[in-house]
Image (cartoon, rainbow, N blue to C red; front, side, top):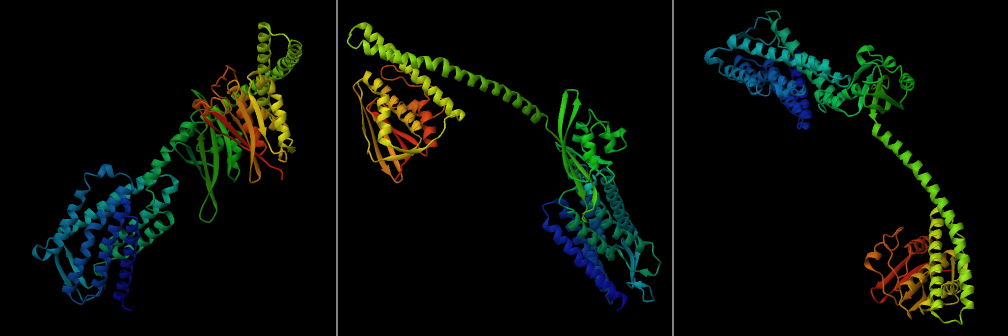
Length: 587
């Protein structure tokens, strides 16, 4: 294979590689840098493609044609490269006004090259040299504008490399490899071009397009290994510096290589200033043995640190993560400082509030103990006494007897209220034991009616039941008795004198539905919204002014839940109410 054939294949390969890179960049075209990289690769592919066929051209006219193909891209490569670097470095705002002017000389170069036969400002002469030399047999005698074009291209290349150096010095370690890949990819074609320009007189091979092979290699490596266009170094640095959490990066020897502004602000108080410790993390955290020991261990860890600032102590959570390279070798550590001062202060307040609540709960328990022993028992004794006296005074009909009966009723009402409060308290504290057995429902209902007979007789209310004597339920008898007494008590409370209350049942699947229907005034809409809630804001008065606590229905609903049932109601204002509750039936 001749040298020209080898050069042809090499340059065609370079063309294909650059077009492939252009395709990869085009897929990321929403990123400005990727778009300019694609344009630069297309321009470079014109250069290498034209050079490939220039080597194989048999005559001067064909060579001139392929030179024109090369110059579709050559004048614009360095300009597109510089714009790419400007965007990549995040300095576009500084150069925005000048970017359109960067294309003036490339456009003039293209026009002068295409019209060179008319004025010879670009080449003074182009001729074939058959006497020897490696590469192309064409000899180009450069005119002044050629050197303007070359000088301008190298000036842009130097400016771009300067920006890269600036970026490298300012970049965080995580993106420096990315910048190195970009620099290596940029240097290769310029080195090849320098070799061509300062080479021996009879060396006619322009190696610049060959340099794009290395450009393609480094760019592809950067794209796939370092995600070159996913995040620009300046953007990465901006994110790094504006993070709310403090970030500190340590090398393999636990020396600080970088830390963001948040970390500097957080560590400003109780630790040594960063500038005075020569980058030693161990020295920096010498006053914090827990952090220091965590840093020295080769494992991920989490700890807490308190730093005194002028405005008081600040609390931080410190997460230490090990950094590994691609081969799983440890290359350093990352420390993440999260400000948890507010969370810590809230926790302290919550703990203080919890202590207060515990004390209040203890006081509440003591209060209900007093209610149970010092109020309930005397009331029960007083009820017994009033019943004895009332039995002895049955034959006496006078105003005094009516007053005595009213006093007796008020005592019983007060006792019922105390009983409801104590039942609610026991249910809240879990002191009400659940002891389910099989019970005859009719027996439980009749016993509940009998317990409420004194109250129903006062208002001359008739309480009836229609319960199948064969129905048995599996439930806690005391709890169901309490539910029935609450429902019957409410029905008596809201039913007028000489009214009626009917208790009946229906069976549905494996449950029995018990209903307590009254001929009372119905449920007020305002009360209905909170009927089964823990604490009702208001409790409606009865037909003769009876008061209540509002706890009965809430307590009933909870007791029925324990027994596997539920409670609901139907009501029409002025026509009465029906309360239903379900219990599992025992077949």
